[in-house]
Length: 197
Image 1 (cartoon, rainbow, N blue to C red):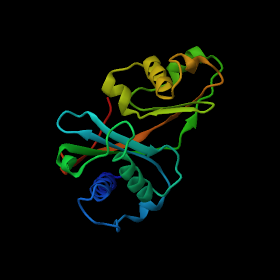
Image 2 (cartoon, rainbow, N blue to C red):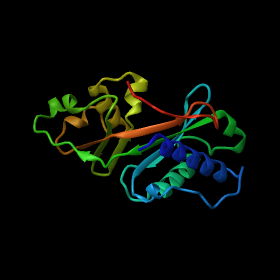
Image 3 (cartoon, one colour):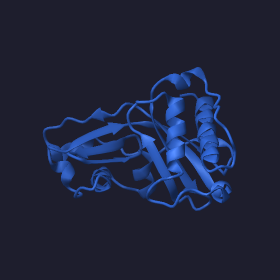
Image 4 (cartoon, one colour):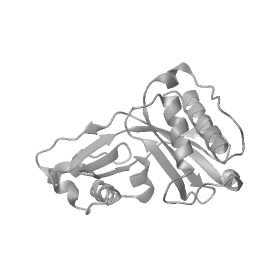
């Protein structure tokens, strides 16, 4: 994705957030043609300047065109069930981040203990699935928390409501994906590409 498309993605998500909380009245989003391609996407809202999570909702699979997925995810992030609904008074104290995902790829490995060797911290996001349990962590999460690959696997299990060592169980499906991440440096400010180290 080009930097200018990443900038448009963040601007569309910001506009959708501001419309959802009633600051602006908008039904029309001007999207480039490339946003018609179906993509997985997450929209994250963080407090500013503390950078604490305020909401994060998304679609891991490419079920909607990118433009529609961005709007739906942004609206959803305003109502993340872990937090009270976002209020328009908070809009100058949050920054918007978008993660545009690749299609998740199932990791097949016989020797489960060697699974951490296949996880690239700073590149891969993870999805953990077993029965009704499903959890996802974006690629930026282990970098922000300084986790190694094993801790990343354990924390994704916990996110899915499972015990931390469940990734060792062959009945647990582990998928990975990558993301291009763009974010506001300051509320309504310049949009930057996030490079994970």
